[in-house]
Length: 382
Image 1 (cartoon, rainbow, N blue to C red):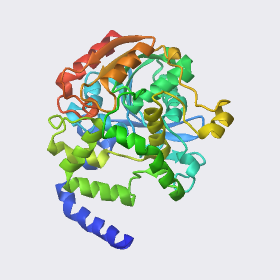
Image 2 (image 1 turned 90 degrees about the vertical axis):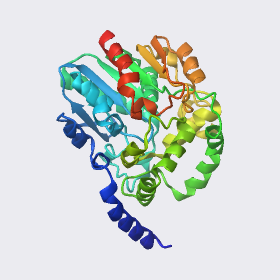
Image 3 (image 1 turned 45 degrees about the vertical axis):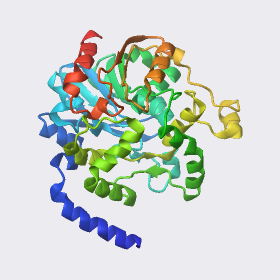
């Protein structure tokens, strides 16, 4: 089948299925916020290396709280559950709620000089650049806009990794964050199990195969692969959910069928191939280290043939770690090890459900009862 025929098929199927797609699947962050009772502001943040990020704010009288998403995700992840979402919950409680976006996703796909469609350099980034450039720019913008000297931060998955990079390499920011609530904290991957461990082992081979094609952006909105994915998962939502469970943990009770059409219109969003490769390296090397460019590249960049570890002893901000028993990406043992490394862990919480997986922290249907009471208590305490 030709590309033209594939595109025609996508157009036809999208027309026939549009009436079946829930409204929330079509709405962006600002529109979802409005639907659930709050007027959201859109702010533009420019990093010191020229990336243009959209930052969403739901104003409140309480101190600012920053929400930061995971890999190939965006700020939508914190609001697509509507009244049960974390963003709306915090807004209803009066917090000045800010939802950030790391470079490359659909809300942060711009640069002052680089064109993401033609300049491959735009996609030369991973969680390292998110933590070193994006997160400090976002924090400084929020503090300047609100007049506060500190804020509280909640990260999920890669959103926690970004914080670990920030606190390790730019330790002055440890004092600007009153507490980091780290959900599914991602730094060490020493206890991966199949099939995820097998995928990690295949990473270098997949990297070699993909390099000649110069595909540096993955899941771009409007791209052929993203349109195919959305249409396929609209019709085969349970199957796509099972694919997610293979890497994040199996918990169908909290990710019910009716929610899936909304989820798969918002996730995944665009991101860099390098971002996936960097995580793959962490899994292979069992270390929380900078990107591995090979012996010669490492010697040029770092002065050593091996990439250096991030110095987590410099990460002194107060941290609450939240882990799930069924989280395949962030195994309880790996979170436990991270707990022994970080200097200032003020709370460690293992979610009560034995089936709590990596995605339940942002998409679980019972978060208001099982997760938010712990988060709200920490926000009040610190």
